[in-house]
Image 1: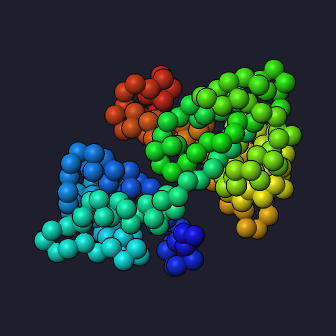
Image 2: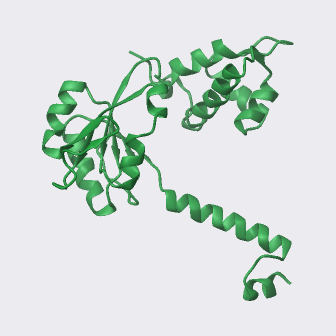
Image 3: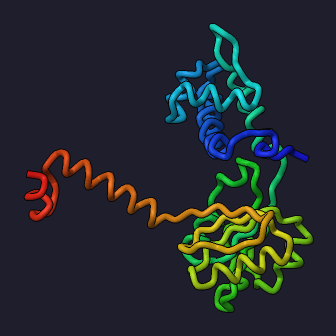
Length: 229
């Protein structure tokens, strides 16, 4: 069983950056790069080199002076720390447009995640084939979790249904949830929830885009152009 990095004294902020480092390392491996300096890896991952070196020090990976990091070795170490050396069974609940798109996402399989079931409450959706799986009823959830040892539940339902789905996932023993619904979930201690709010991310981008336009004094509605002047 893979050790939980946070229990080994690795800060949550560092854990959150590890997937970005791994993605950069995977791209370097694909490009045939054998070794990489901290500056080069930091640039590829979009962080400062000092922060990267500190993050990697928690893993015990310091590289070799004058040579840098062995790309394949560091990628393997990071995959092990993230628990990606084993197969994680995943269920997706909610087969709307987003759930359908996630079910068809090929990146899960290449990163250690295996979608074992797609679930929905809509009788018009249940039974439909999506990405090689048939959508099943939520009534099947307990059996699916037991049979496949489901580790992670992904919620892509409307906000009004998300808490009910989360409760049912927790009741079956699922302790990790990825929530795409635009709401905050209440879960017991010992259950981890990661929230992905696409509209919030777009709003943040809109804020920064407006600031850039204000700085340039162009491309703004008339009232904002007057403010910029």
